[in-house]
Image 1: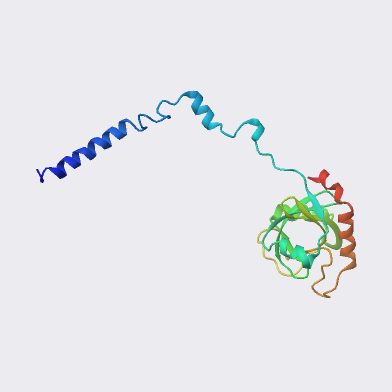
Image 2 (image 1 turned 90 degrees about the horizontal axis):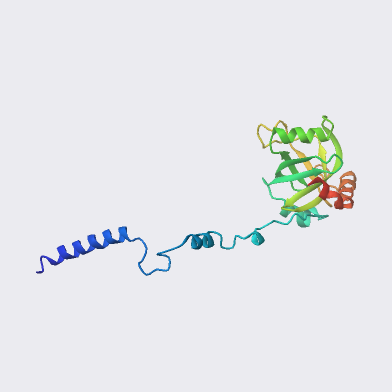
Length: 200
């Protein structure tokens, strides 16, 4: 009898496995005889028209200090949207560094072309007011120049060097002083903050 016990256990396991394959749902489960209506209710749980998620389209424009706030919010290597106020054009940049202000480059050749179009197809040191989206839906008043210089970190974007974005109380790298022309553009961007909706 002791010799046959393992054999009986083996047979029992095989039979139970076979029965389980034939009856995948417990016989007395409330889901054993599920109806088409049950399937519909389960698949549409919390998915009625009234509960579809719709993200807010509201945006804000702030005038934040570069050293106190923006330098932390505007992450290095972050893809960021920039809106030129006077032309209404939008382009995207990567921040590649900068301490006194943000050093940036367009993310690709298409965005470099848009950036150059803002300056009439000619590189220029002229300051222009912009809004920079440092976090989703949160823009900061800023100022750009349009003359590539220094090191370049983004390959194949059609730009040899980087350009600068200044914010409230940011400084130039060379003089380490606040640039009045950039600050004037920053003020313009903040003063026209209520116009941003028409560019989005």
